[in-house]
Image (cartoon, rainbow, N blue to C red):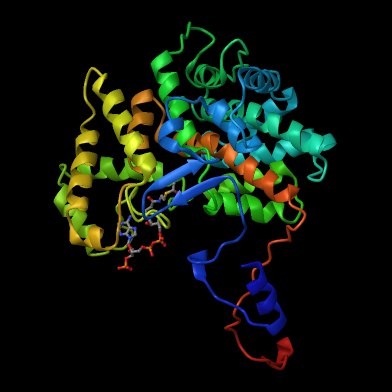
Length: 402
Ligand code: ACO
């Protein structure tokens, strides 16, 4: 690949590949996907072996350091993160400046950028110690920021982290706890959320990760790069799909639960009507993460007093789609987002927080990819070419003559 690109550069030849459908933007040793076979591996480990067996911090360490941690290494990593969960007091006041109905993803990306104003001592991507402390700070502070984005939206006071709790428990307590009421974290809920974060932890060169790399390729700092990744993730064709799926299921429910009519609208390509949570640029088979999430959704929702009718609508949609030639011929299968929203809803998260949960999960992947890129001496600034389609040269006409 590198030789071809050097040759093309010499000849002035430019290739156009809209959406990077067939063009690799980098080499990477982090995540392997075989989209036809439905295979996903982090650093060589199949996702099915990691999900439910390795904790989110364990997997984060694996992605970032290319090795499963020993118990001592994991305890050290968790301890370092634990002591950085607090935000600077001035930073907490930022949250009061946003309107109550601000989208939590917008608050999240703004706050991540703001971190770079507080940690100007560690913004140099070429200094490994600075990169390491920025990694720890981001891992530690993102759950605090995410919980504050939510608390702000419901007008509740911003709690301080409780460092006696583990990573996910701490996030759940900051999100759902109140100073006035005792809040005990449900261990089952924490375990499932931890597993969902693992499933989201990396996915090679997706839109947000490519964004993180592109921004970082200019030697912008880690906070600036991750903040850009959060913004890329917010779109409904990417991380925003988990919220869009729930909106879609609720819309079908409101219309009387008629799944066939909805599927026909999708097949007729009505403007703005897609089967959200279906299809993927790389997977042309069942997304292996979706299979794990589907099982978790069934397990979690079966423990509820009143089953969520949206789950039945989702099952029915999937059943119809997988037997329909429109979806079969285009190899459209459920992706990771199809069932996650139902679990988040059952856990009590509002829909506009779903994509924030995705960002929490994807953070170690963004960091690992950014670190891999900045540590590589062959990295060049990302600078795509274009095919110009505008006007040929024109003579300027002064404004009084137009
Ligand atoms: N519903 C209906 N039709 C679809 C869907 C869908 N969800 N996804 C793709 N198609 C159709 C397209 O209309 C197109 O049909 P055509 O050949 O008749 O024109 C064909 O399938 C190929 O689709 P593309 O849009 O070319 O596929 P692309 O790889 O560019 O897009 C994407 C992938 C963005 C994920 C797309 O499938 C989609 O919009 N899905 C819904 C949103 C979603 O779930 N996003 C989450 C992705 S996973 C993630 O980010 C975690």
